[in-house]
Every structure is written in C-alpha cells, then in structure tokens.
Image 1: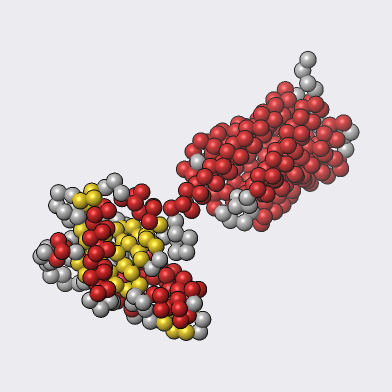
Image 2 (image 1 turned 180 degrees about the vertical axis):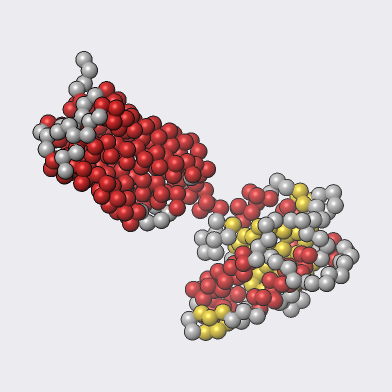
Length: 395
C-alpha cells in the first residue's frame, strides 16, 4: 500500500534528523571540516521546517504556513552557505543570513496577504535555485574529491529540479490562493526524491569527510611541521626514482653555528630562524624548483632547467640575502649566515640520491673552508661558466 503524503513527510523528517545527528558526531570526532557543523545547523532548521509544514498540511492557517516557509528557507540558505564554505573556506553565517533575509522578503508577504499558493510557488522556486546553486558550488570544487563531490552535485541538482516541478504544477493549475498545503503527484515525487537525496548526500558527505582526512594525513606525512616545506620523505618520493643530468641541480644549505643560537637564545629563537630561512627559500622560488627541510638546520633545493653556473648564482643570492637580514627574536637582533653545496647530474644521468650526496659533500667543504660560502661538487667545477650580464636570479 502506498504511503500517504503525511507519512512521506514524517519519513523525510526522520531521515533529515538522523543525518543531522550523524554529521554532528562526525564533526565532534575531528573538527577540521567546519562545513559539517554548518550542515548540522541547516538540517536542524530543515527538520523544524518539515515539522511546521506537516502541521500546515493538517490544519491550514497563515501562522504554520509562514513558520514553515521561514524555517525551510533559512535551512536551504544555510545548506547553500555550507557549500560556499566548503569551496572557499569563508565563514558561512553572514551569507546564510543575507540569503535567508532575501528569501523572507520575497515570500512572507505573500503568505501574510493570503496568497499562500503563490507563497508556496515562491518557496519551491527559491529552494530549487538554492539546491542547484549548492550543486554548482560543489561542482566548482570537484577536483578535490571527484567521486563524492560528483555524486553530491547530481543529487542536489535532481532535488532542486523536483522542487521546480512542484512550482510548475501549481503555476499550471493557477493556484495563487489555496488555503491549504498542496498535495499532488509532484509533491509526492518531490518528497520521495528528497528522502533518497538526503540519504545519498549524507553518505557522500561522510565519504567526503574521510577523503579530506586521508588527504590531510598524506599532507602531514609529507610536510615539515615547523616550516611548512616538504620533508625528506616527500623529497625522495618526488625525485628518488629520477635520473638527473647536467640541467638539474641540487643545492644543500646548512645554517652556520645554529647550535650556538639555540644555546644562547633558546630553541624558540632557533625555530624562528629556521622559519625565516624557509621563507627566504620560498619567497622567489622558480616554477621548476622544489625546496625541502632535510632535518635539523639542513635544507635542500632542487632546481631544473639550469645552465652551467646558475646553481652557484642561486645559492649565493640566497646566502647573501639571508646574511643581510636582521632577525629580531625576543628583543634581540640576530645576524645569521648559511653555507651551501651544489651539484648536478652527469650528461648520461645520475640518481638523485647520488647528486644529493655530492651536494652534501660540497656543503661540508664550505663548512671546513670557513662557512658563509658556496662550494661546488667536483664535476660542476669543471663546467665552463659563460659570463652573464645580470647575475640577479630568483630562487
């Protein structure tokens, strides 16, 4: 036996409430995805609106109709704001409030003047626009997680179309003032689609959360927590299987007398010096370069498509810039220096790890030769360097 409209509304309300509780629990477990909390708020409003609309279907009147309209429009506006928050990381509440206020201004006067049929048409049209707009927001962010986001886009757009269909039926019937909640095949279809869509969107939202958590863990595993640079593991994952020729250089940097900074000014000062040097490395990073913290006070820069002599110029530019910087830490002004070693691959190719070891050996030559200097690996020294008019480079 087919369920009546009231039973379908009850099923929709229960489905939305269960999804709300599930998303709230997911957000509490790890509060990095704040868009989930926004969805929880939106679902709370939607569930309240469904309860008010269910009351309107049983006892006609301006108050339950206007209350249902207000709650549902606030709920769907917040759903849209959650999608914008997901895409842009912007705070959602002002957007949700503004869209809700516009929706209220467009629809509530219709209910208060007795044009409840026109008010319900307006509610369906605005809801359709908000749900389709929500789908488009997730579509714009689909590269982050194509599977879950693609499914959510389809479900939001299909749900929006079902609301548009409800409006079309009322417009076709000329129902501008009906005095009760409409009940027709489009309304039944709409509730059925919303129940299925709610379930699917809930499952995909949870999958999206897990996708994001996995991506965050991968990022954390590959990133140095102090400087935000790649770590040693990430550098080897990126270049470990590659063969370097003479057009690719590895430059290894090491801060001079770094232990003395820690001993004299404290480890927090040392950490700040490391962060500042990392910023120097990133400030003018060229597109073909990668920079990583190998550990301690040692950093590596991998630069592709370099001409002979370019690696030395890059290293010297970074060295001079850092040596000239005043570093203010805890009321003290520090001047720090850095030593560097550079190496390139062979014409026939050479493993990344070998080139890195050659650069590391050249670095320790620089340390032994007095620090605050750049030394080249033996093969690089033998390459003739053509004169360059302007030695300024970006690293």
